[in-house]
Image (tube, rainbow, N blue to C red; front, top):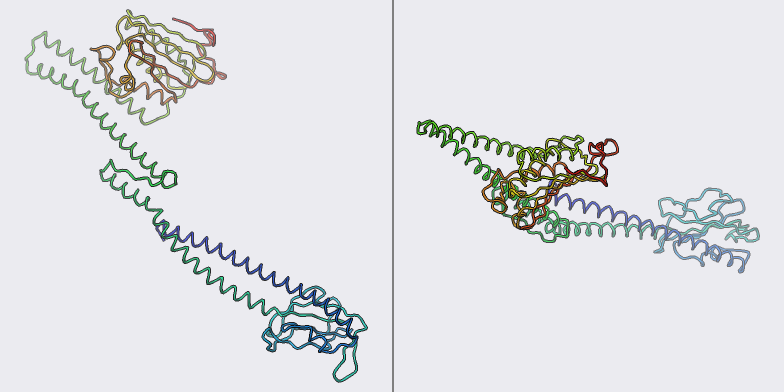
Length: 488
């Protein structure tokens, strides 16, 4: 069967059949052993009773003396001292019908059937036999001759009743097994049909989602069961896919909107210049605005390309980078571009990390640029890099106006601008902090923001430290240690 339900039903039936066969075989073997042990016990007890009866009644034994002690299905054979058969009691089955006697050799040895032994018969049942010695004083009275000495006697119990009981048991167990397997197969089919219903619901819902009904979800009957866990996982996957598509559509819409503004500006100034509507002064202004908007659009396209590359989750370049040195370089650049701003830097400890130097440099530039652009001119900015054997922390803090909780929760979103919350009139692509988060995540780190209105903002980047045992950071070479820092 190709269906999962059919394969499971066949597997259940096969396992149940195997288990039943093992149990049936074990019960038959156990019963056979029990019957065999019971026959051996009877032989031993009868041997004792016969020896005692013969020893106390007469030293001359007739056939009747022995026959009266036996039930149907039991046989006694007497042997002379040389091991030849003298006489054998009549052989009948449990119903009193004549039966074949056990097959005996012409002359038996002293060790023949000394312990309970199974002997066949000529076309009849098998016998469980036991032979024992009667001594030299017991004689057998022949019907037509003088008494002769008896050397030994052989007791035999027919195993025909046992074999008959075992045969009936096997037939009964076979029928019971077939009925049980049929019931198990039917019950398994019904149970699996109900149990696999959620899987059919999953397939049906997945097809509807693939057809465009993206809001469809699967009902989880029991989230604790295995099928329920699969349902929950699929619903989470569907939610993630829908959210991803919504983010993609929003990203495309935002990117289109951001690109439309500079393109519209460039087109307007170009058409004005093309139609000769601008004088010399206005022509110079149009060329300047076209250049500005082109640069803005180039920056936006570059940021979008970088985010696309980061979204592909490529492994960053792995090289040893001194984050303290990068911070010092970034602060020096910022002081040149904003000489009126007070920017302090502190580097302490081992600040070497493994990563892409250009990307980490961009993290620093974006965080410092964000603080410069979105805070008033008198705002102080602190850049701190501290590290130990385990991790390195980069902190960019300002004492500006800060942000409210709603704004702070969205600053890492793409194209989100907090201009009005921090300093109205400023702008940008709205991708800087999103790029920071993507680069830090690609390096296995984390970035967070702590801010409150009127209390400034603190951006903290945490990265795993490089292997300081195999290489010495440039900060260390400058004479720094974990207890000392350098302030610039």
